[in-house]
Amino acid sequence: MRILIITYSFAPAITPRAFRWAAIAEYWVKQGHNVDVICAWMPSRPRNEVYNGINVYRVGRVLTEIMQRHSPKTSVYLNNDINSKEIISTSLNQVKSSFLVTCVKWLHNNTWKKAYWPDYACLWYFPALKKAKQLFLMNKYDGMVTISHPFTGHLIGLSVKKSYHQMPWLVDIGDPFSFLENTPVNNNRLYNTLNYFYERKVLNGASTISVTTDATLKRYAELFPESTIKIHVIPPLISSEESLLAEDFLFPIDEKIRLVFVGTLYKSIRNPDFLLQLYNKLLQTKVSEQLELHFFGNINDCQSCFEPYKKLYGKKIFLHGSVNRIKAIKAMKEADILINIGNDTSYQLPSKVVEYVSTGKPILNIVKTNKDSSVAFFKSYPVIINILENVTMLETERFDKLIDFIENSSHIEVSILKDWLDSFRIETIAATYERILKCSN
Image (cartoon, rainbow, N blue to C red; front, side):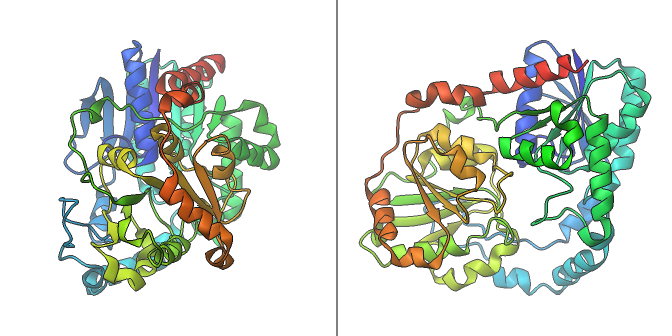
């Protein structure tokens, strides 16, 4: 097969969709398929390149890149030496004191962000569509895959499909578009009706559709019942571990109990406030001396959540900022306890939850509701404690159970979970995508 993938983010970008689709594309290439990818240009990357056997065409994004260079940095980075207790000189206070950064952020939030549609990638639509049309004139494709978010990629697919009616088109939905209420991708007041109209057009035009959870499928079936028959659930993907074998340890071998969160924080859907309160209370218990709390990933607009705990930086709380995928996976594998902060919705499941389970490590799962998608996902996992996010939790016997969980839980052998984990491996995931793409022809 010759397949065209249209995705804003692609390797080596550090995003869930980039990780997922780079792995799938590489696997397809190894299976003998020809894969072309249209994605957004990245600084220091060539416009056209062969990346692990994949023909990658990077287009657009020049203006976006200029804006991002002047956007505020929202993470506190530690010295690369993870044993160091020193924090880099660029602190949160210095970041916030930058007048230029403040002005650019204000202008962005109050002008461009309120006007763009369908999302931040809208300017990429035109060069990406132009490249897609060029490639279709040069090649005969057996299928096309468009990926969200951002939703802009699906609009490119919709436009291409008008000229190539018979070509199978797979719409892969990482995050919903029109009903993403807690973190809307555009000005919902202005564009709500338009969002639903175009998501319906994309779903109707698609040959086949994939989502990552049953709850997402259920929500789409409620809102777009005419497309239900085309929707398939394809779960998150486990990373390959081969590249980790020769790496050094991130953490020293000692008696510390390291609690590790890997992922991106947001005030609206993945807020660290309760975790930090919980951890602060744990520091008043018998396990205090052993505890360390590590965050790997961007903290975005949550910097104010950490400010009351600044005295703990480099001692009890470590903010590592955005890291490459290898370091993120190593952090998971070397953690004593992994932490998940659930989303506020039942239809969004962080891709990292499968990575967490694949380590066999104990997991502390903090959720706002028992309907959180992560509660259902972790249901059969043997070493999990679900903590419902509320202040009374800090005063109850559940807190004592948490201390016992931290002190006494041990990791389990991954071989015990082998059969369950097989459904999340690249062989299964890639084969499922290939099957539904072929069957939609």
